[in-house]
Length: 109
Image (cartoon, rainbow, N blue to C red; front, top):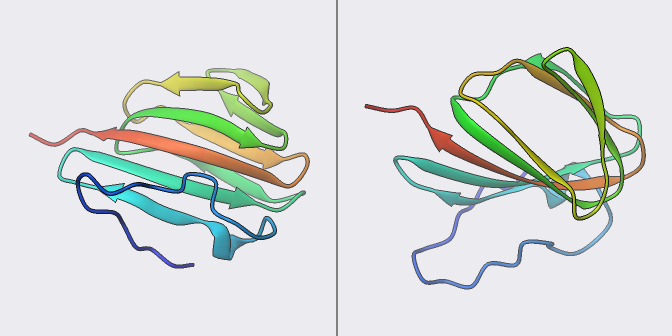
């Protein structure tokens, strides 16, 4: 998985190109307080419970993902987003090939 990131003012291709595969995942922006990551999930991919190092916004760009957090499972579909507070445990399962845009506001002092 290529983890390159963009410079300030640079245009960013949020969708990327090609089939949904881990190679399409990429760190798009990385600063001291912000990370934006394109996450490609092939159908059936399960990501076990984990936490993010800050407030997280998850925006579904393509496909369907079951997102488990706060005692509920919600289906993310294209154009739908959710956010979670700092270090909130969550897990996900790709119902179909899916592409997510993850934005994390890092908890750094």
